Image 1 (cartoon, one colour):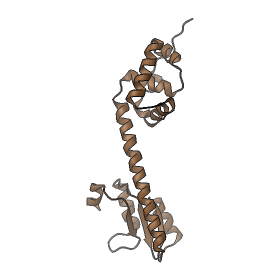
Image 2: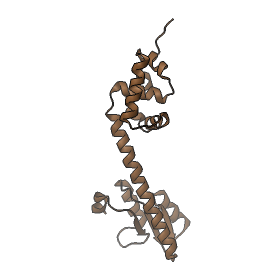
Image 3: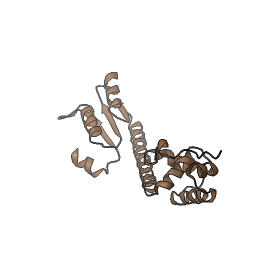
Image 4: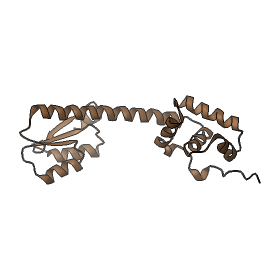
Length: 178
């Protein structure tokens, strides 16, 4: 189990509840503690509802009672692998976005935060004591550096990376022009 967890090249794990040294549920729980992300399908010939609930709570993607139909089993495995592939793709995309945001300057992150909070360029300019054109330049730079094609994508990126952006209380208040 340790060598498999290190390699992270497994797309799906199929385990039986009753195994010689460790139960399938115990193995699943151990895999979860180790941060093993592959989907796990638990099979058994001795199922009861509490066992199925335990397996699902431990992170199993499915719980199948023997005997089972080979076509159904194949379908479940295919779905689990597809899910794993999708999760890996999403995780890789999120990591790439987080890396891009982490490379932004503090001012760029501040503008990103304010844009995602719904402020217009004029409002951001007032809040940060910048010119409107400077804020527009920051927004254009953000769009380019984050490879966002529209404002909605920029907001989505901001929501994915909120922990990397300045806290609202660290952004200066709107200047009073009265």
